[in-house]
Amino acid sequence: MSNSKQAVPDTLPLLRDRIDSIDSQIQMLINERAACAQKVADVKLAEQGGDAVVFYRPEREAQVLRRVMERNEGPLGNEEMAKIFRQVMSSCLALERPMRIAFLGPEGTFTQQAALKHFGKSIISAPMAAIDEVFREVESGAANYGVVPVENSTEGVVNHTLDSFRDSRLKICGEVEERIHHHLLVSPNINADDVTHIYSHQQSLAQCRAWLDRYWPHVERVAVSSNAEAARLAADAGRSGRAIAAIAGEVACELYGLVKVSSNIEDRPDNTTRFLIVGNQDVPPSGKDKTSLLISAKNEPGALYRLLEAFERHGVDMTRLETRPSLMSRWGYIFYIDFVGHYLDESCRAVIEELRERASEVKVLGSYPVAVL
Ligand SMILES: C=C(O[C@@H]1C=C(C(=O)O)C=C[C@H]1O)C(=O)O
Image (cartoon, rainbow, N blue to C red; front, top):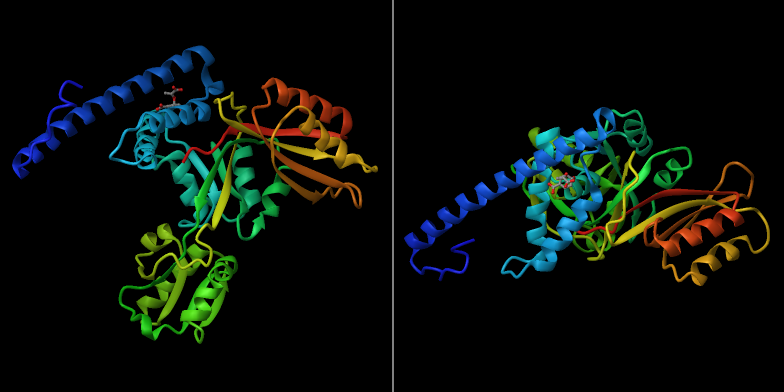
């Protein structure tokens, strides 16, 4: 831009004039960008036609965000800047048709937070009551993509999600990581000193146990179906003057009009959950990808060793291994393996080919960009 290197004025009126002028340029450029994105959609329609057209490209979006972070010079931080671009892309894509995203609900869950982090805010939210319903909603075409939790750094793997992949043809199209922060919330008309009960999901109560023991040892803890439900109940109670607090996240706090008594009360400050994006799409390489496999191993001595050995020999970096019962045969197992790379990369292809010779079933659940935000 012509005036991007102009000296910054130092009086309030001049600074505000400058901001106004920058804003109008930003606005013009955002609309110019949106017009280009619309044109891209037209080209895709012309090339791919009708129902087959895929407007949302996770690999391209990841590349755009990575580039934003690489070239960023501040004073805004890389992540802050990428979040702004995340929303710009979300708005551009929604010009075509906002995507419907199914997630593990109700409104206000951390999974919804993850969905918004991944897709931006210009989506239609479709809260589902259970993980398998998220899968079904996407399989039936009622939603474009689904978001489900898959592992938590404190609590471990989410079995329902892994098990859902057994019978599903959906592909993993992306991953999101979310630092999970819990807050103690009450209705604005309630005095925190009067609180008689604290509601939350069992996992969250567990993740804040030491903090609760220290500061609220004599208040009864009540486990409910989700944090968002706890927040809703606390808001409801507040309306009739009952002093019930909830432990929940930021989104639930805002959604149910609660106020924070204490923030970030989780015992482990690095408490993180990883979520997966599931869809009907094979995502091309983004340059920095991960792949997830489901493998049914033959039930014989050394079976797992022979599977893992292939990764070692081809220098492919395995990041996760989970075991689940196969349900097909007693003491048969299914392994879930994540590794660095795309299934089209030469070394990854070689590994997958060898696994196919050694296992009774190998299903590529998807290759997808490593989480950017
Ligand atoms: C514009 C495109 O389509 C969508 C919008 C994007 C954007 O706004 O940058 C990026 C990828 C797609 O989700 C594209 O494929 O380039």
